[in-house]
Image 1 (tube, one colour):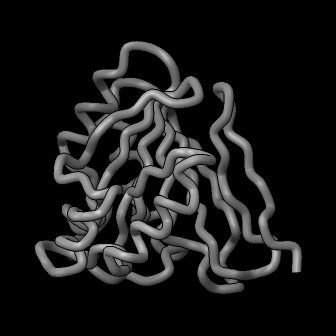
Image 2 (cartoon, one colour; image 1 turned 180 degrees about the vertical axis):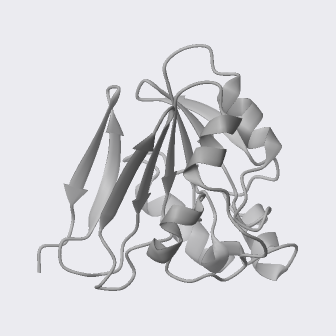
Length: 183
């Protein structure tokens, strides 16, 4: 990613819809580095991850999983627990639980074990949907994987330029999946 590619993305779509980025390792790598600095200078750059938005009837928490080596920060968990009403969705790049690790495109940047879905559910006092995007790059990986345990719904989704790639659409308090590639 370069500053010109970030700005091209913004100028191409800014009149059609709003784009928010939950950066991943290909966008900003890990820690402080030139790619992160370039992202921060772009229209999408934010220093204060995680942050919240209200869109389509959802409270969205945009997380930067490269800052915590895939782990959910206490600040992200606190934002999820502080929701008053409505659906809360945490959007991030990396897989948040050990059960989904085999779905990840790689284990780049993973420094310690991920919590189990059971352990993560215990950290949230309310219902949370977690959507991660670091999967589906390879044909053997599922296009979308969903699991639910107690108060946690996990969705792993990514695009790999394969047949039946799918994206998730949030609209009017509903989640949809849309097949974008039917080669």
